Image (tube, rainbow, N blue to C red; front, side, top):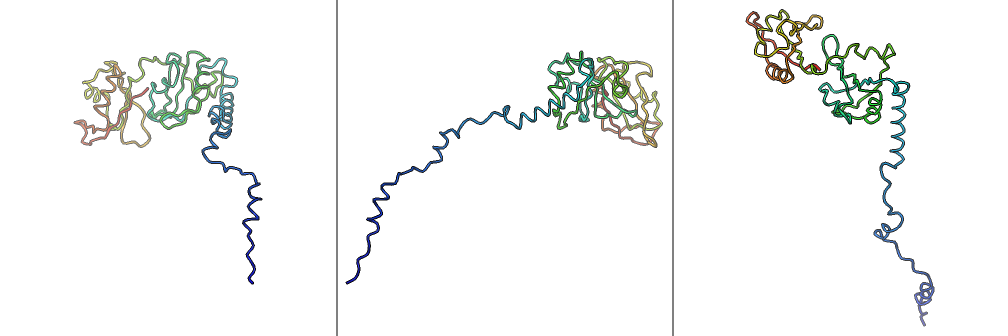
Length: 255
């Protein structure tokens, strides 16, 4: 007589029923628990706190021993197309900036740095505290407070501040024939209102060694006249009757 198969399901079912049923947690239920707390704000995150500490340390190193009396701030790594208004917009108040001096070499080439003169040392410290490490046209600004009593820093501070209303009235025209003279230029530029009727309105600028062209600094009567001068001559060809050579010229406003 064949043996009966053992009914294992019947014997196992009572033990299974006695076990507690633990529901499987669902993904949407986990969002309701303590794990779903609001994320920590960026201002309170550890990484942002460390970044702010590094920034404050850098600012303290820059302003150390100078914040009490120095209204001069040197800004480097500027874009070549920067204008004074771009720097004034960085400040909370445009009136806090007294003057902006662009650094140029003997050939009037911009060195990508300026000296900003503030009304007071407090304005300078506020500016560097708020704008240290900021970007301008993709360039990260590097700022250094200048000590007027330090001979090394004093080289970046002009001895006599120029008059601000004349900023932007000067135009550098380069690429002219090397034999050009101010009287030639005065005849050519008679359509424009120069700042002075004498030769002081057309100032020769040194050219690089072995250069086949020359450059002059033209003093116009206003900013609008300077912009009109640039629109007329920039990226054009210049030719005198005395010279057969056509010279490509470039113009740049000097601040």
